[in-house]
Amino acid sequence: MGVLGGMGPAATAEFQRLLAVKAPADCDQEHPRMIVYSHTITPDRTTFLLGKGPDPEPYLLDGLRTLVGWGADLLAVTCNTAHFFLDKFLEQGLIERPLVHIVDETVRACRERSPQGAWLTATLGTMNTGIYQRHAEACGYRFCIPDTAMRERIHAVTDLVKAGKQQEAGARYRVIVEELWQQERIPVVQACTELPVAYQQAGLPPEMGISSLEALADGCLRELYKPL
Image (cartoon, rainbow, N blue to C red; front, side, top):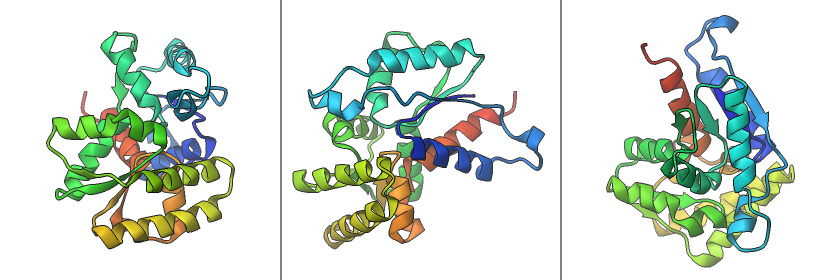
């Protein structure tokens, strides 16, 4: 498997931890072979989508092609916002290997864990593209969307995780989630790969959170260990 990561580094490290913990393996040799390309120079996806920075698309495509060149035959990308661009690559036939799609895997996890719906928390870039809303609508799933001010506060939490301020991120995220639960007490989807890190720090009930990183890990393991 080839993992395009570094967006951000803490999320990529947590993804690797989840794969190691969840893999149906009893020894080193039964764990998946994996190439991780921490492509940290990729421009910020949300910044570009908000019209304030360089285009990450060439970096993402180069990263995926590099992984394929290194021998990867299954791909995963540990960034939700990046999947807005990946959907374009898929439509154009530019991704040369199967991709485990983090949005599809997270929506799948939501449908299994909380059929009645879930709060969607993500970066401003992910929210503005509507990628989660589109993928959920295609299968009839309901996401509750925080208001504009709340979405900006959620995005600030992701920036804190990227800056290594995980405890502060957790404290802020806890306040946000508790405010959302005052409106409707349904699980909260961490649809940015930094948010599962913040959720862990927040000390919130594990059963009330749905991690996009964990969903991606589950999807990768399903593909890696499925019968030939």
